[in-house]
Length: 215
Image 1: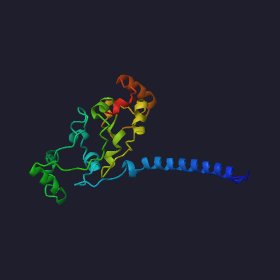
Image 2: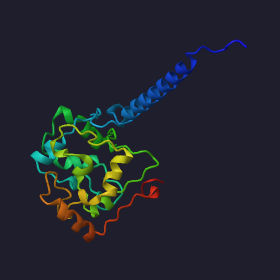
Image 3: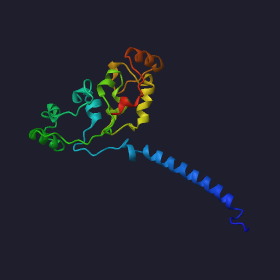
Image 4: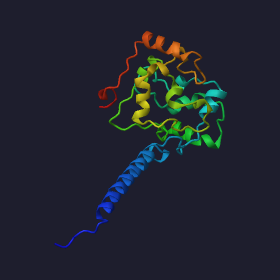
């Protein structure tokens, strides 16, 4: 009986399998890289806002505490977006005629909120509670970065699940004294000692069960 396949067929088949495996691995790597890129996560991307609000000017330069605007951060799952009335507490007197703040004055006069673009926008199936994290000694800067150094606010971290799990698995690396939660510039000099002590004092549990964060 005549030979149907060439002698090289086995070699071609083996090479084809290897090439397919390499291509599959390469495609997997590309997809993984894309899912972690700013294009996918919006990390580091400055969104256009109706008013170019400068956090570094209001916090670092003027010394306004986070809680003056984000009033519910210690009590609620949401940090809260300040009403226009909060802005006008100061801007009735300061920059009261500034063209840049015309939208603020219009919003206040009309009783209509300013439509800010949400920077930290978690999926609907993810639940996050600000008050719990504040109570457990997780600083604002741990998630939001050095907001006091941001002329325009942006998402400082990826918000990928692996990023959340880094803290949930080893909270002792990130916890700080409750008195320093709102201190953007706070740095620990002995976290390897302080961290475990605070984890015990604040009764922090390393919660990584799916139901902790997912609805």
